[in-house]
Length: 388
Image (cartoon, rainbow, N blue to C red; front, side, top):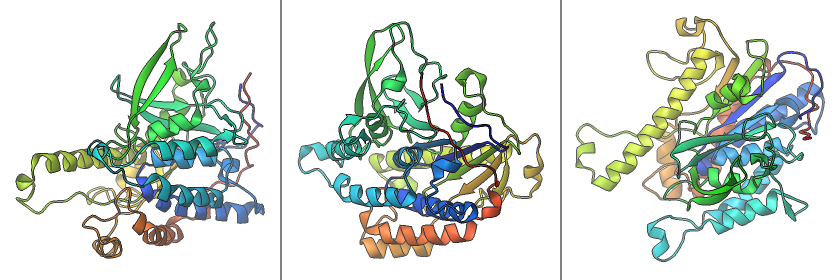
């Protein structure tokens, strides 16, 4: 069972990280600012986000970052690994396989195996005590058509060991992250053997968790933290829970009047999927702003504004304090990206040439929106995940 010291409210501090490919570098600039400000407050130059947040979750690229952070890595370390991995994993396939997906899975799998292992040898599992906080990784089980938000909470129904000793906590961490990042058309799916509660095993095919309602996993994290069925039993309320949600930047899917009807079937299918995924991601954020007290966030639409200090924000009860960091890329930023990358699309999920611009925009948003006053000053967590 996990052990922790007694904490002063709000003891429950949740960090949620969206999916978005290489745009995860935008996310990291936000996290870097948060970590820097917390280090100054506590006078601890070696403070890491796992010292402050006790539940960290992510989808796809957010799952990669979340696993680093939950392990206790500094944001600088995540940056270093992320920038080292990117050119390796985003190396296009040559040959007929590119018809099915753009990039091979082996380079990403090898990098994750190397990073998430014990001294470079034995693979860490979801239940590893190397994780310093609760962790959620969002996958989609393509074989059953269901979203799989998996956590390392030992009380979760499929984590409790059965008489035959099986538990999802034994699943390799690298493989869960790889599955969460298996974006269709970009990477192959991930085949993974999962033990059933009766001791038998079944093999499922997993794809990117972004192809589910939880590309933005903030609401899923709140539900897992508070619903009795999940067994995490975190207290909720304005003074008991802080939920911080970080996006990867948004490129609007727009069409001039009459243009959509002229797009071919493949193009229309891709644009429709992107539109639905973005709409669901935005809706998750909007629901969080209704359920929680939002202190910062971009405009959600022209009717509701940003829901900070609006009539909608006054709806009661509030279950948590909510911070949302994201950015709608402007026309000028998109044009600059196209010029730099020499591409027709802006801020694509695999756009390596947009790295510097992404980081620059991320730093500007972080400087504008991240305020230390939004983060309660309370004892740091001394939690280490310990399983019995």
